[in-house]
Image (cartoon, rainbow over the protein chains, first blue to last red):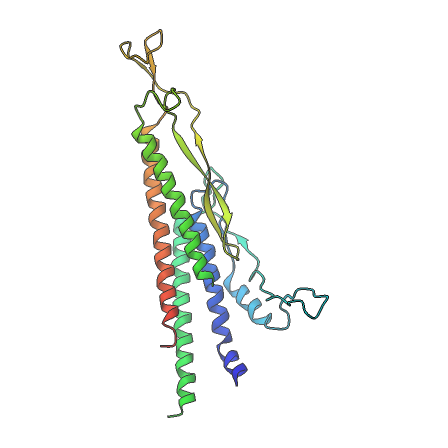
Length: 134
Length: 134
């Protein structure tokens, strides 16, 4: 029963986790808008989500253990390959952060995060109405 | 939870930008300080930013690596009655470039504003996440 609930919410959970990670990366880009030689980074959300969904359980990275009393570790690895953003107009100090691009990406990411929350709360409502059976 | 790390990233940028604003204020206040604490004319101070890893993901915050003194020569002003004048009657003034400092100030204020907005967005998303399932 619990694993079924987990499976029902798994997709949205992964999507939200990745959206939160992307929010952090974009915030890092905006924070470093004035840092010389900083290169703006981002990842492709669709690829990252596919990888997160296919890695489920079995393929997660585990720590090598030599004793049954060792901890296995959570196997939490970087969600996806981090890429560098191609600048339209690179600045003279080697910084590739373009504020308009980062701001629009941040706004887009926030909207998708909220959309994910809406879907998740809809699913929760559906599940709880099924559980109550009234 | 990686949305919390967004606060750390944006917060690091806030403190870095406010330090830059402090340096600008110090430079503008001392634009006519012929004698600084070390007995020589005041030298303009500039902050150097560097990206620093933050949180468990790939996000990078920003920190002030060092505060450097501008090494460009000071302005020479002809004022023979000034006690700090040399034998030819010239006084060495600080090497503060007021125009540069003003643009620096505007840039720091705008970056501060943007990072505060990033923080605000993260806060709204977190609050909505807390309201999930209600």
